[in-house]
Image (cartoon, rainbow, N blue to C red; front, side, top):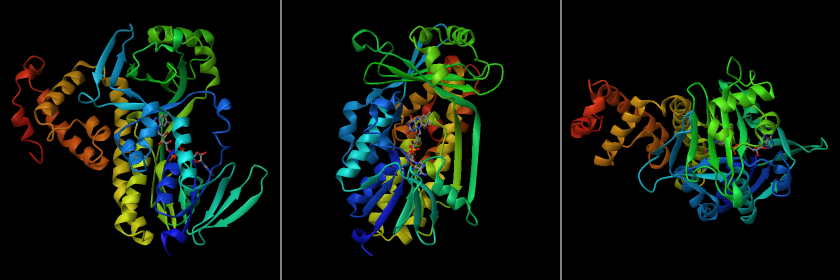
Length: 448
Ligand code: FAD
């Protein structure tokens, strides 16, 4: 069967499902997308809160290959580094990478709309209010339920589950033999809050930075929106003395914010309303394997949901689409070969970014204000500047170097850490670090 005569169902018209539809249409497949929610393009007024996320090189590269990066750039806000806010409101800026390297704050709904519009323009068919409740991997059928509870069964040549962390497709696979699955919640949840634009749409905090209020056992972050506002996210324990459960009155919420985020609290006139109205959501890592069963494939969060602390979940899902497309090209659209190769190639990478995302929570909330950590970063920056291709800091490998696989970045970072632990343990390193013998440090790398 040629690409042209194959009909593929993608379940979920979120970020990854919509991008994948574009890739597959460009290869000539017939593509039908089934989305549980209503069409967000018709419901923008009700959409309410603006939620943003960080788009970086891996995601941009995947968008570039379907000709979409130029549509996103004008609505993306570059963030060149972390702006740390201490409890007194003092600011410290740490660049993410070299001059000219940055990540981008983009609106989740705008990005999704751009992707859905492009998928439609390329000829994909989008079906909204269609919840897929079950699949049959032997017959390659999906059971779709409409809001009126009509159940319809459709048959396809291939089914792709892009239905997110709580994927119904994955749940169907879980019922089959030898399917591994794990999920692990962290003790923290998150809540989105809001800093509005100032007079005439002015940004009330530095526009081109990702703001962090690191407070050791918890933190708040803020990303800019094009209208001058910021979307803040409080990552906070569910239970305990300092927790969502403990912040149960106006008084407790206000006192807590004034004491711990005083500079932000002043800019949050709707703090109480946002705190009560916006949900407290949980954070989970989900892993599973295999991602393929007969002619059904899982992709994006459905295959590998991670915590958001590296800003890589969507970027990883977009990279899935680009890699799948490369394999389809390499094997002339022979899915029997492509599917196993895809899952074997991507699984180590998504496992690596899952771990790095968990590790980065500790770095963001705990270490970014720590003197040893800052010194370590300075020494690494010096190494990188002297040996730009030999010593690339982990953050740069993950965020800016899309030719380095996540799994490679992870394993290189282990070697770097071992070397840096020894360097940092040298007596008087605080005063001698500028005269370190960088060449001898580089030689200790496995490829040194
Ligand atoms: P989703 O975005 O979850 O889309 C799944 C789609 O499937 C949805 O439209 C849903 O309605 C639909 N669906 C679900 N079930 C069914 C069904 N049964 N039938 C039909 N349709 C269905 N990533 C980054 O790269 N950078 C960031 O800065 C970042 N920040 C984040 C912050 C937070 C707080 C969180 C929670 C995540 C963050 N992420 C970030 C991760 C990112 O949101 C996800 O990785 C990304 O949304 C995954 O896309 P997806 O299309 O696989 O899944």
